[in-house]
Length: 228
Image (cartoon, rainbow, N blue to C red):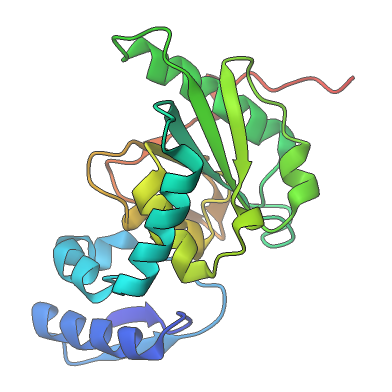
């Protein structure tokens, strides 16, 4: 039996994925589920290439996002860290928290700098999220050169996914129960480091359900900022 959450933006794409899953797994039963069900990558990670083909963006979306990317970063060689936030959902067990986001960014900078040959390379943050007040309250390391709030570009959710795939050098999911954050990371090129804050939900752990190549930022890695 295969489980799939049918709450996706494009029902046609959903049906195509269902057919692929049934064919590849030779399954006779497919259970459709609705609501806030967390995605488990083990059921379809082996079909990544086919899923990427199914989710291929239209030429119009690619052109629009490419134009915005060039307009913002035509003369910008900084390393771009994308941060996805989700506020208002998963309250109490998985929403983005200001202090955690701030400290996770600091930790990622330490990791990235330790692997870079150019120690003087600048960093830019691309902040994804619907609550700009929340985004602006996040404290960032002094080595961050610029911050862009993607909400200001007024993109659709699909366009945001493509913009992220074109613009992000690495990605941080701060609400790893978010299916949208999952797809943002999953649809990125293979060579992009993807970080996330681990969460647990009714006995389920994001560490068991997200791709093994994604990097979990454990609590003992992060020194939480004390409130003044």
